[in-house]
Image (cartoon, rainbow, N blue to C red; front, side):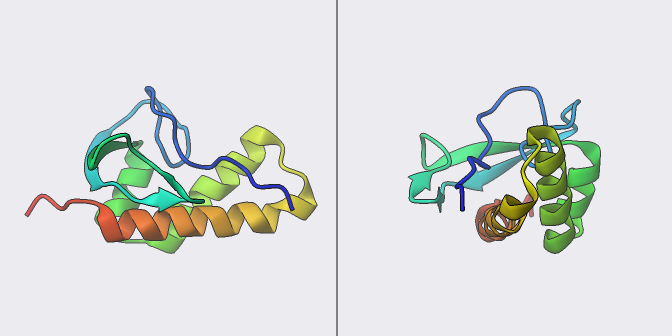
Length: 105
């Protein structure tokens, strides 16, 4: 199966689903996806749209992964046989994000 680049590259869209505008930023400790660090530094910033931010705030990680994966599949026109791989990758990214994002306690 093809390996898709599902890690965000930055910009003015949501780092999960690529929707605009960005509603909230989250500080996050660095982590690896597919053997590569997400950020250049120890801590980075992860952008979210309003819908994805709501899912982060309520810790609905499976819903966040599903939304992000579906938007990616639609945007990139991912072939049907590669979709399970994309779902796994987004589930992994959301899980890793959930373990590393810095709460504002």
